[in-house]
Image 1 (cartoon, rainbow, N blue to C red):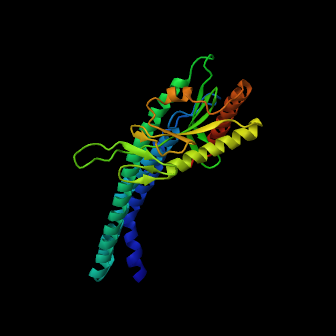
Image 2: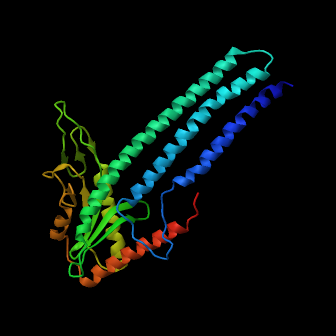
Image 3: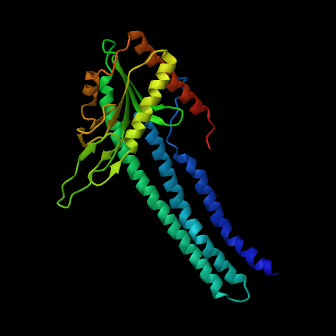
Length: 303
């Protein structure tokens, strides 16, 4: 029977399929999330959203690195099995197996390169997010200084990196990590010019960081106004750690800073007036939202 010539070589793929199944089963062991055994609603830590994305990136790297060789060798193993059972040798068929295996090797190599670059970007973003989070922690003082900081505040469709509550207003802080380009003479180019709708870096320009900061500011202002019944002053802040900021052409609605003295800057800014009752209600609303969303996340089944 001709079909047996193609069916019997599958026997040689069974060990590889079993190994691939073990790799997929071990994937969940990489989950680094730790949940408290107590019934406590913990606020998010700085960079927690980036930590989750970094965990997913490492998981993808593990899967592609482990499954890549197994899947890439499968056509060659099947082809060797065909050589044992086929009455005649068809070199065109064997060449196709070799080409398929080569294509799979190239595909998984590109996936590994993508995962490597993604991990590098996320690590840089996490380092900058942690630096800004550490700077914002200086706002937290005893009750005589009513400051409160929230990290990774979830909206309906995106996440705000930090929200700082001060006696004079709410600050929506977005952090963006960008590596410094190097000039031909070896100098690091650290200056970025801020315009109304874009950031002009030494060799490129970006609009999305300012857009995301304004988006988060609008959402926070509308959400607080809806729940407090009055207009709450909200100021958007974009932090670019390590960069020298040129704000001569910047718009006034978004404050772009390097983040080095962010805590001091926020204590000196007064985006508006806010009563003590509204101040306390804002903190209570943000705490309740953080706890509610975290509780929903913990209830979701793991996949």
